Image (cartoon, rainbow, N blue to C red; front, side, top):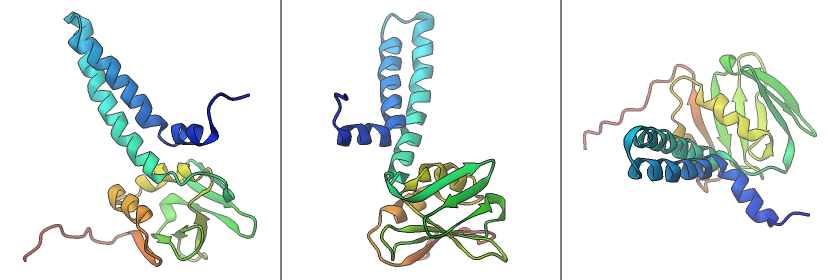
Length: 175
């Protein structure tokens, strides 16, 4: 018997890193603003670490689409595997040449492309899909905030999130 509603449990699970960072922040501030001395210095260090944990936790929480989708994702030593009811496959993260988000289906799918192989389609809500955050974040030049913004967008198309060797978009505008 559980005393926490399933919706509340799912929310806690989705935002767990940010919540842990908030608790550590409160403890760090209590120590830092409390008696002082060595415990005060430790408190300020904990404040800095917990702020980083909160930022990372918010990013991870935004990436998680919840479970219950079709198939299972496993990420092991840079190898991304998807085992679905109709399709599946594996790709080494180091072999990826393009990462796209295809929002045309329900649910939306990550499209992982590697040379000489058909693309691997992974539903964003597949079991274990939260492990893709770390695999995608390790791609050279991937902009995490852009990926999260595209994931939250309501468009219906297919968008390139990352492409190997693509020049970084310029942030300087002439007009």
